[in-house]
Amino acid sequence: MSNLSKSKYRGFEADRSKYPVEEEGKPVIDLESHKFTKIWQGPQHPGVTGNMAVELIINGDEIVDAKAHMGYLHRSFEKLMERRRYIQCFPIVCRICVPEPDTNEYCVSAAMEDLAGITVPEKAMWLRTLNLEMSRVGSFLMWIGGQAGSLGMGAISQWTVGMRDYWLDLFEEMTGGRVYHMYMIPGGVRKNLPDGFKDRARRLIVKTRRLMQDIDNTFLSNAIIKSRLQGLGVISPEMVDEYGIVGPNARASGREYDIRMNNPYVCYDNLDIKMITATEGDAYARAQVRYRELNQSLDLVAQILDRIPEEGAIQAEMPNLLHWKIPQGQTYVKAESTRGEHGFYMVSDGSEKPRRVFARGASYTHAISVLEKLAVNVSVSDLAGLMVSLHTCPPEIER
Amino acid sequence: MEQLIRKIKGMVHLKAYRKQRDDLYFITVEKAQLEMILSHLKKNEGFTHLAFLQAVDFIEDSRFQLTYMLYNYETGVNLGVLVLIDRDKPEMNSIHKLWAHGWQYQRELHELYGIDFPGSPRVHESFVLEGWEEMPPMRRDFDTLEYSERTFFQRPGRSTNDPKEYMKEKMYKNYAASPRIRRDDE
Image: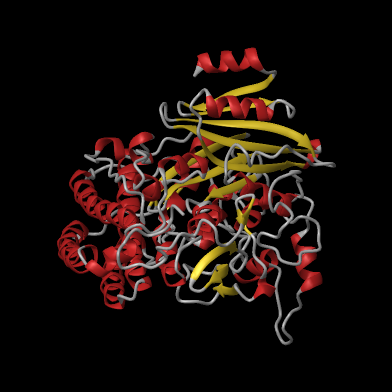
């Protein structure tokens, strides 16, 4: 019953402790009794995030039981990487997350560098930080559009996805690619910043801030949005450890865990950055945390632009990457994506190809265990909002 | 961390120990003692976060390596607990009572590696491969090329080239005779 909304606008205020009958914590569902209906949300549905499906048992319009189904997007990235040379992994890994591919590139490069004992030059580190933070901005912008769209506010989706396009323009200048960049490679990055990039980036930050003010006025301060998101999908602090919840989902429940501060990587320890948390743990708190983190990411991009060294190498000295053998060993490298802890576990057997690469997607547990638990007692119409508020991303679940 | 390792050595038989970075350690323990050590690390040592559970196929030793990656929020240390299990009869104790999301990884490992976790909820349900009847595909001896040639067919009218031969023909036609510095292994 803990997931039941306390908002005055929402239904389901009745005492549900006696119905449906529960046995061992699970509701007893007899579809033949005609009291329940089974419906599928997805795999083709505007209200699911990406290609996944949720099998719902509903009573009226209240969800009594939910089961998440994967497998519509399996491309077997991990197996492919076992059959390829290290450098050939890069066109594969960026496909693991479409809105935010750079975290994958960073983790794979860093894992290879960790195993091979390569030190990356300082300027390349700063460029990586810039690239990672810009990708966070892009992904958050897309998320705001998704959350607003899932609650019926299509106009905001148009604004934010439009604004993300300007950020993709910057990516195109910086890396040559709009969506998939393959910018970070073992030993550093591929390119220097083009002329005038910093000024254009600064102008875009100002433009994005203006949009953020509009979003605050129309979305976060909107009474209807508040009434629908407050009390929806509450994650209690105890659940964070129990379910391995990470990222803004955990921070909205009061857990102070952000890898950029707890285990600083690239140049994050040189930046002025603060942990953003909330205590309510509901969908609205998560929206607020993400909104504030997006603002902070804009700050960080500005800080990084001021501090990137003008001179310096962007590549360490590397052996021929086509015949590169990495010494035997194993490592785990992680980074803070917009969805939380995104990590790569890499095992090398000393040959030219990795023995095993595992991508730990941040939303692996959010989209299955956590969603199945939180969806119970939620209205069918709120499920889309709940899924987006957990920021689930199917490609990183079934890598 | 050194203190913790000494403590663990006193508790269980530690087969191997390795420091990868300041914030990443690996220990290898016996299969029978795994549950005990995980439960101790979670309840008493602050390793409350299970980042993932995964398998690595060491086919040449006829072993699967299971990796339980734990994290301590207080100290910021990642600890990988490794355990080697028999590849021919892969079976492991379930950890779904320690972590509520443990069953997800176990279901995935059952499908992709064929490792059984008796007692784990929904472990025999399909995860991504509905109706799969072949050998678990993430095992090293699963031949992907043979499988795809047997299962799929070429659209008529299309031709394929061996990439190595094709590149030699199209791009490096004069390469062998070109006046360049030769590699030692040529």
